[in-house]
Amino acid sequence: MKKPVFNKILKLTLAAGLFSGVLFAAVSPTAGNRTRVVALTENKLGARMALFSQLKLDSLGLSKEAFAFALAGMEKLGREGKLSNPDLLTIADFSLPSSKKRLFVIDLAKGEVLFNTLVSHGRNSGTELATNFSNAPESFKSSLGFYVTGATYRGEHGYSLRLEGEEKGINDNAMSRGIVMHSAAYVNEQIAKLQGYIGRSLGCPAIPEKIHRQIIEVIKNGTCLFLYSPDKAYMANSKMLATPEIDTTIV
Image (cartoon, rainbow, N blue to C red; front, top):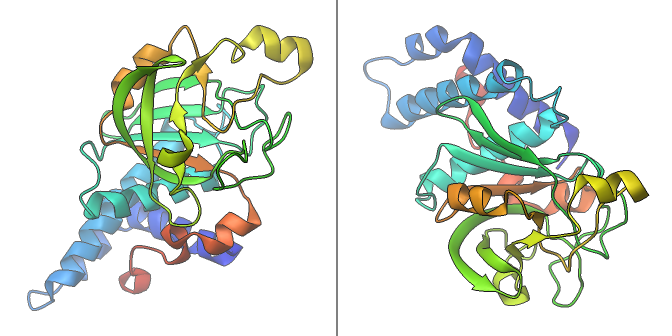
């Protein structure tokens, strides 16, 4: 993904919020259904992008790029009927070091940050920062991209959440690799303060023991999870991000 594409997505979302009246005025009585759907979707994305400032997500450390990409990909998954709750978005922002609270669970309909906490990356993805990613079995690396949350189960790490990777060749081996969301004792602020980074997983986005059940209960069964990094290989190969989902020519 090149920078101009990101700029186009931002132009889309921000312009949609600022010019919603223009969007609807641009739809003539004889316009096709496609044009009306485009206008409505642009307006929705524009309003949601405005939450970045309203919720002061920048002050929490969330990348604006991560939020914009997450909204675009989530919209695509929603239109494909893959989400049971298209208003709930979870982002793990791996552009941040693991010592930072880089997991964000956001209720877009209510305009609330439900959780902001630590999350691990794979042991072979890096130490403080995650910089290497893989879809390969036994790589012990994190896989970037979009996931849809599945059912819960009790496993080796207790109460856990299955994750379905939605990007072929990038994270679609998640199920066979056993990539799930679970709790881990090594994901805590004390360890981060002691050594500068939290412990690492075998590729799973592990979360703190104290709140893992609350988070899993909220995001289980068909919500969007986006594992983000400004990784050049991911940006270049992700079909979820390759083409902006909205036609911006009417803006």
